[in-house]
Length: 196
Length: 196
DNA sequence: CATCGAAACGGACCGCGGTCCGCTTCTATT
DNA sequence: AATAGAAGCGGACCGCGGTCCGTTTCGATG
Image (cartoon, each protein chain N blue to C red):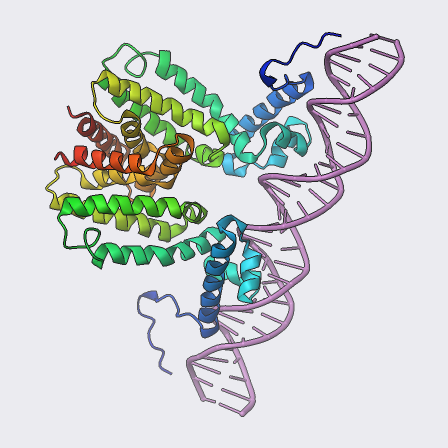
């Protein structure tokens, strides 16, 4: 009897019903989030909407944060595609500085509109890391193209940090800064860091 | 019958038992946080430790975040005193640039050690705002002393953002950066922003 | 000191996130 | 097709944050 030799402990492929349920749950969650707002959606509601038991939801997505991270991931991959292969100046084809500024503006608006969802996703394991990692990588690349010298990973973090949801919401909600002012401020920061 | 004319709707002074309970609860919370860690403390446990009912805890501090914010506030005011009137270079008496760098290092370490508590305090109303506001004010002041031109509130935010807990924990836990590297990176950022 | 209204108290109660375990369903194998 | 056992399923159950409301305590007034 020949067993297929589990190479490098491949993590067991998903059973068909499991995959079907995963899709149903994710779709249900997306629908409910759009309809009731992130904070108005309970896990039980998602389970009911998807037509499965509550346990199944947790089995597939571990935790509420995990589920929200998965929902967030839908729009996030879309955005990453726009950055990597969309039209300039966000996508390739424009000068690095233009791309960097476009990147910041885009991320800024995205983080403000998806604020509640991002917060609900929290530090949900590898997913949140992947998102931050992508942004950091891209900024590092652009800084390199611009000939910036120094500790690029740290500098990238310095540019990304002011775009974090907590920071932006503080500025908008408590200090009543306008979107334009924050944008212009970020552009200024970029120029100081790049040294143009 | 003469009533003292409530000037400008003063918010009704606290009743004596209320004040006593507030102290007891805060002390109990501090004790439990130090003993079990932030995430191991439940509101019921705090109530029991303080010898009051659960309702009382919520009456005094609104929410769990509020209570944690109050606990955090204890050490936070201490730190603010050190910044405003402690020994240089953190306190007054050193050149502005030295003070700014000392400020960053101090805040960085504080945010890392108090990470769990700060996260538990969340965006708890005015308290969190006060903390951010203080830091922002101080950085703005130092930037002014350094003769920096531009939108100082926004620049201050740009310097403070990389010191946020979410950012630091990302760097330390996921990207495995050393404390020293982050410190040096922040110093570099400051110099680029100040334009020295 | 007796009275009285307002403020505070406490714990029963609710909804939600998360776990657990006995039952069902899938799929590899013969 | 029959079978076996692993993977998945669902919903009862638990603990916690937060609310509510009948009861108690405070302190101002006469």
